[in-house]
Length: 304
Image 1: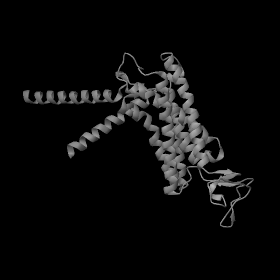
Image 2 (image 1 turned 120 degrees about the horizontal axis):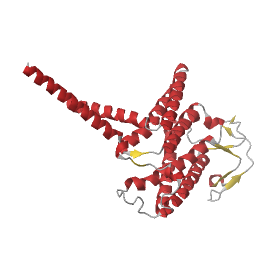
Image 3 (image 1 turned 180 degrees about the vertical axis):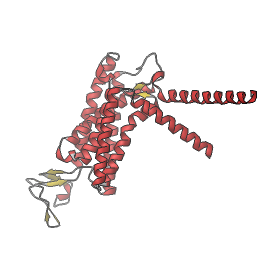
Image 4 (image 1 turned 135 degrees about the vertical axis):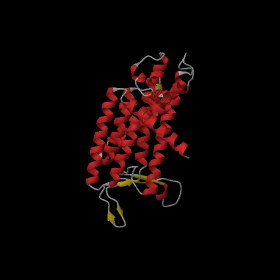
């Protein structure tokens, strides 16, 4: 057990050092990471003073999520372009701190739509990169047709979007939250309202007020429970994915020409960028140096 604990501590120490090296590899992304981290810590302190412990948890979660890009690069040996890494960091901050704690989702109606569009775009970029990351041939990067790669990227992005909507629905049903934001509508069409009980939609229009248990909701219309929000999220995810896949198609069609896609697609790490390997080699060299030093000291003692 002690040997396993020692190995585990040694691995986490290597991982910590490698992540620190990864964070400092690119000056621009490190400045963004450091700035956002300071803002999150300041927000956390403020939430502690306000005794809003749910937001304290969100801040702690955000601090953890900000490290994820570097953790992925170190453990999976992939290089995330600086542009993509900065976008991911800002996306996390915009969703958790600005969206949830600062209530941008309520203040700015377009905020959720903007983030879901960006999510579709980023997920398509990640799906696009899988072809490169899973391809072991270094002589020719892309063996598959541009259309196939673009379709796979698009489907990957849409799957991520659907899974997120599943997660929102599950959380709302389990914990009674409102991640699937409701929408006020002024007309409803439902077969359940048909007086004959047939499969014929009955329509009610010009709805201006709705009462529940005798209480007027004061919404100016009927309350749609999350459906339109979900459909809107999936639609803008579709747009984001489609935009990236269009760029990706022409990128492959012209054999890798185009800075837009190149700056957004993760790729394999080169040997000199594999910080986990570098840390392992440095620790091994340091350990060997200590052994040699101890051996020389023992030899000197024998000679004396």
